[in-house]
Image 1 (cartoon, rainbow, N blue to C red):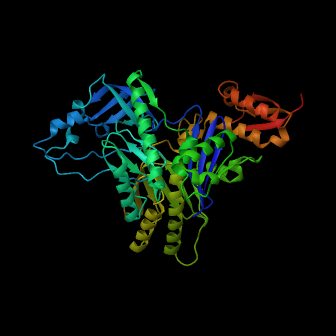
Image 2: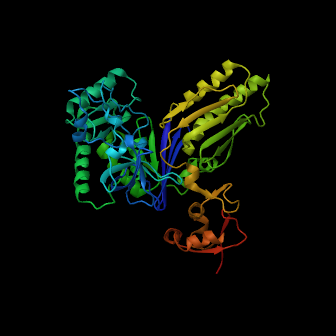
Length: 521
C-alpha cells in the first residue's frame, strides 16, 4: 500500500491529509484561532462533585468546566495502602490513554485477585470541592459538552508513551509479531525506572535499545519539568501544551508505511526537518517541500475530497449512493442502488451495491471523523450468507481505523449497529455551522471557512491578479469579517499579490457566494 502525508500550512489554518492508495483516508484541521487542547495538561480546581453521577466538574480555565469521571481519577498510592487486607494484592488500574497517542494499544495489566478493589472507592472519597488537581484533556469539547479530562497523565513520544502514574509496560497491538512484542516488553522492563510505566508504540517495531532509551530519558525529563511548573503555577492554568498539529502529524502519522511527507510552508518544513533529525532521522529524506504555484491540496486532488466530505449524498462508482445524516445522538447511513440496475438478478445487484458501499462508508467515517453510535441501513438481502458477507466486509474495512470500533451482526432488517470512539469534532462541525436561513435544520459553511476559501482563491488566481486592483463581492457578513477578524490575513495576501484588494458586501449574495474580479480604478 502506498501512502503520503500532505500538509497545507497557512497562517490562518493548517490541514493535514493522509492519502492511502491515492484516496484521502484521514483529514485533520486546526485553525490558529481555535487550536486543539487534547493532550494539554492543566492545573485545575474541583468546582463540583456529583456522587449520583460518580463524576466531578473541574475548572481548568476554559469557557466550560471539564468533566472528570470516577474511573479517570488516579488513586494516590498512600491512600491505596488503606485498602490492603493482610497483604492481599490490589488490581493494577486500567489506564486511559488519549487516542491521539496511539490507535490501538495494550495498556492494562492482568488484574490480580483481590478482596477489595480500590476502583470501588466513590468519587466523593477521592475528590473534594476546592481541591487542586493536575489533569490532562483526553477529549476535546464536543458540541455543547465540555472537555473530558483524566488524572492518568500520559506523555506521548515517537516510539514510547510515558505513564508516570503507573508501573507497567504495554506494547501496541498493531505490532503482531509475538517475538518482537516480547523483545520490546523485556527491553523496556529492563531499562525503565521503578514507579513509572511505558507503552511501546507501533513505530518502535525493530528499533534498537539505545534509541528507545534516549527517548525514555527525554520523556522522563519532560515530566519532571511539568511537575516543577505545576508546583508554582496558578489555578487554573495550563502547565503543558501538546505539540501543534504539524508536529503531531509527523509524530503520529508519519510511519514507516508512509512513503513521503509533502508540505507547502518553508518555515514548517524546516521545523519538521529539525524534529525528524532528532526523533526519526531515517525518515528525514522522505520530507519534501512543495513550492509550486498551484495550491498543494488542488495539486493532489484533496480539495475536491474535502468538499465531498461535507455532502450528505456520496455517489458510488456503480451508480449507487449512500446518504449520511448526523444527529445529536447518532449517525444514520442509508445505502441505495440509485442508477445501478445490475446484470443478472436482484439479489446479486443488491449484494454488489452493499459491498461497494461498505468500502465507501469505512472511508467516509475516517475522513469525516464521525463517532458515537452509527446505524447503517443496507439494502435488504434475502440470503443470510450474503448478510454475513457484508458484515464481515465491514469489519475488515474498519481494521485500518485507529479509532476503536465495535460492530454488531447485521439484523434481519439489514441494519448494522456500530460504535466508533469520538475524541474530537467531526469535519462537518469544524468547517460548518448551523444554517441561519433554515433555522438550524441544515448546515452552511461558516463565515470563517468562506473567508479562507476566498483567501485561497486569491492565491490560486495569483498570475491573473498580480499587481492589479481586485474587487471581492461577498455577503455583507463575510465582508464584515474581512474588515475585522480576518483583516491581517487579507493584508498578507495583498503583500503577496502586490495588489490592492477591496471587499464589498452584496445583500443579494448567499453566505457561501462570492465573486473575485480585477477592476480599473
